[in-house]
Image 1 (cartoon, rainbow, N blue to C red):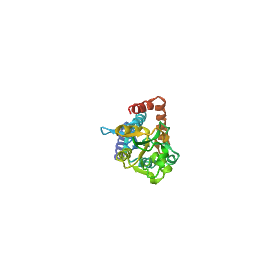
Image 2: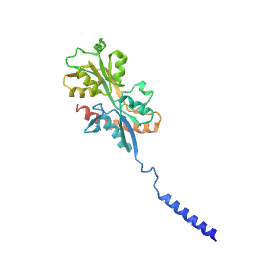
Image 3: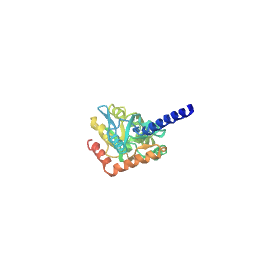
Image 4: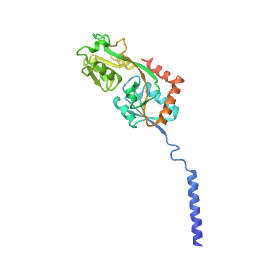
Length: 253
C-alpha cells in the first residue's frame, strides 16, 4: 500500500512539473537581438559626436538596418586601424567608418554591397605652393593622413615613408597643417569639406587624389548574419533610405 501511495505522489509531482514547464516561455524567446558594431567616431559627416551622441551618415544607415531587422545597436568607438581586426576576430559583428572596399582588406573581412562612393582630396593652406598631386613628390613635403586609411596606404605607396606624417584622427592631421607642422592632408572629400569650413586659411585642391567605394565590414565566419544585414542594406538602398540619409549630411556641408 505504501508503495502505491508513493507512486501516486511521484506521478502527481511529475505532472505538476511537466505542466509548469509547458507554460514557461523559451529562455531565449524574449532575449533582445544585439548587433555589435565598431567605428572611429571622429570622421564627419560619416561619424562624429554631437552633444556627446554619436551621429552621422554611417551611424544612421546602420541604425536603419538594425531597425529593419529588429536589432539593438551596440557601438564601440575605437581607433580606425583596430576596426578590421575587431571584425575579423569576431569581437564585433560589423565595422564601418567610410571604409573603402579594397582587395587587400577583403582578404580579412567580407564587405557588404557598397552604399556610397567618395574621393580622396588634398587639403592645403590657401597660400600653399602645392597645386596638384605631382607637387607632393617634392623633397621635404610632409603629407598628413589618418593612420591605416586608404589615404595613408595610397600616399605611402606613391610617395614613400619619408613624406608621411600619420595621425590617429583626421582632425589631428588638419590641426598639424594649420600650425605648419605638415604641408598638406589627404583625406576623404566630405570630411575635408567639414575641416576646411571649420578652419580659416585652408582649401581643397580641385583635383581628386583617388576615387573609391565604401562598404561595411563583416566576418566571413557568420554567413547567415552577413546575408541578413546585406539584404537589409540593399533594401534600404533600393527604397531610397540610404540616399536620403547621405543627402541629409552632405547637403548640410
